[in-house]
Image (cartoon, rainbow, N blue to C red; front, side):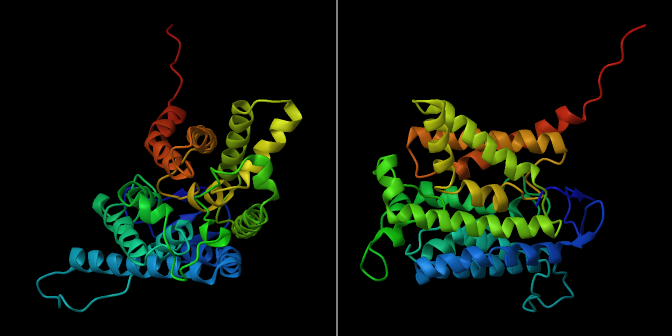
Length: 323
C-alpha cells in the first residue's frame, strides 16, 4: 500500500518504511490479507461459494510465483526440483484480491487462469516484486473480462440457480434496474454490507500505518464529484445519487485495497492525490458508458500508466530566473 517510502522501487524490496515504524514486506502482505477478513466474512454470508474464488486464485498465484522464483534463481549446482516457498506473501495478496473481484459462481478455471496470469504477466514479466508498473490483480481481471466475457458475466452456477446474491460482485453493478429500483432491491443492502466491510479493513490498515488516507479519499472524492457532474437533476438529489453509486461496485474496495498498491501507484504525495482523483473520475466516466459492469479496473490501469509521469512532474525543480 502506497503511502510508504520504498527504499529501492525498481528491485524487489524488503523494507517498506514510514515515518515511525518499519514494516517488512511479509508483515505488510500479511496485514493486508488480515484486513480482508471482514470482507470475506460478508462474502461467505452472502454466498459461501464466493470464498472458493479467492482461495483458488491465491493458490494459483502462489504456485506460479514459486515456480518463477525457483527457475529464476536456480544455479547449475542446485537441485532444480527443490522448490522453495515464496516468503513475502505478495502472490497470496494478489490472488485474494483478484478472487474477491470474481463472480461467486464463475467456473473454477477462471480463478486458476487469473491467478497464473496475474503473476506471470502482471508481475514476473517485468522482473518480479517491486518492478511491475501495473496492478497485477487488475491486469488479470481485465484479461479475464476481455477474454472470457461470458464466463465473467453469465453462468449457470454450481447450484444451478442464479439469484441476486450469486450475481453481486465487487466489480459489478446493476445495469438493468433504475436507481430507485436498485435502492429498494435486496442487492443494495448487500453491496452496502460489502462496502462497510471493506471500510473496516481499510481503517485497520490505516491504524496499523500500512496505508494513508490520501489515495482512498481522493478516489472516492473524484468518483462522487464526477458522478454528480454526469447526473441530471437538482444538486441535493444528484449528490445523494452519486453517494449511492459510490457504494455500488468496486469503488470503496478498490480505493482501499487496489489503488494503494505500493509498486504501481505514484510515490510523491501530491501525485498520489492526483492519481486517486483520476481513478475516481475515470471510473465514473466508464460506468456512464455502460459498456462494462464497472470501470474501476480499467481506471486503475490507465492511471498506472500516468503514475510515473505524475511523479516526474511533481519532482521537477522550478527553473531559476535568468540574471
